Image (tube, one colour):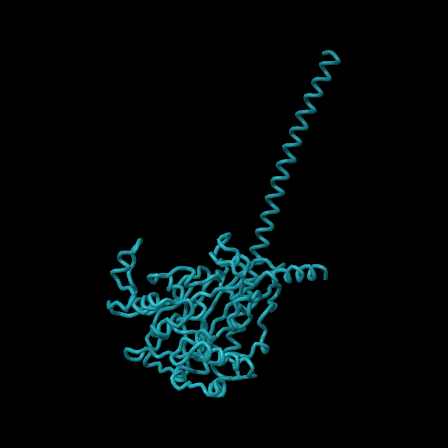
Amino acid sequence: MTHREKGRTKGSVLIIVMWVALGLVSVTLYFSHSMYFEFRAAENYYEGLQAEQAIDGALRYAMYLLANADEEGVLPEPDTYSRQRSVVGEALYWYIGRGVQNAYATIPEFLLVDEGSKLDLNLATQEMLENLPNMTPEFAAAIIDWRDEDEEVSDGGAEGDVYARMIPSRQIKNAPFDTVDELMMVYGADSVLVYGEDANMNGILDPNENDGATTPPLDNSNGTLDFGLVEYVTVFSKFPEEDDNTQVQNQAGGNANGGGNQPDQNPSNNINIQGDEPTVKVNVNTASAAVLASLPGMDQAMAQQLVSYRANQADLGSDTEWVNEAVGDGDLTQAQEYFVGASQRFMVDVAAVGKNARGFRRTQFIVDTSGDEPVVIYRKDLARQGWALGTNLREELKQYVQQQRQR
């Protein structure tokens, strides 16, 4: 073999060795990337478990607060309990609540919520429903027809024959609502009417709720948050003065993982229906102006007067006598029969993140305090609705994580 042929052979071997080395390096990189992604997935899963444990802890803490309230049926003052960025192990949680509806808010309220502050879908009259923001007379009538037991069509409403002609067709329920989400089944419902622009139900205007049709939900991009009917109504209201002998039992539960309406350990939802006429009650100490304005004898101006006066009072407790002072010469004779000052059902809406502010989870609970101890009667997974703590808090959490790493 000549010198030139030997050189060619060595060159070929070198090339082969280089290709083999490149292949081995590629395989190594592939497996290292796979292991990295597996590590990140495991880390995210672990942080999600931390967040879920924080939610469980937040629920137990809320039930303790409700069971040991200074006054039965009255939520503790916000500054007396831990309600935002509370620590459970390496996780953090927040109670996402509602204050006075603010169409310009960018930071959520962090509170426990009184379900008695809302109008009960199963008890409200058609006139009350029509007084709610963005409600139409036709949809209010359709709500009445959905929940009543007869086939008589309310003026502008819809009974079974209308639902049979829908595509796809469905049966009318002719029974009380089990959840507020059930409004989407009522004839004439759409997501804008029911949920408004608040896609993740956190009470603030998020960037995706102010960009028109770019990202869901569809909004008018006018810089203000248009609330849907879910902001003002409930199916879970219950008050201390109710007579258990007149209550009708309904199934209302949920699955913490799926967010559906499946039975829980304590599924009863008590609805007070006396004779043919429902008895509507609203906690005047916690209700919004929009809800108060829906009651007979009230208007928006008088309702706002009550809310403004209430905001300047230190601790109302279960007292309702203040309403007469609040309106001055205004006449509350008709409205006062609907006012109460205490409730027995509360919403505990908990958002949590694990270590490094990842693994976001959120679950909404309805807690009934009418028994010997508080019980959960409904739960719904809201994590799929997306980040609910606002963009400002997201940036604060990034800084918080950096500070933790530097310690």
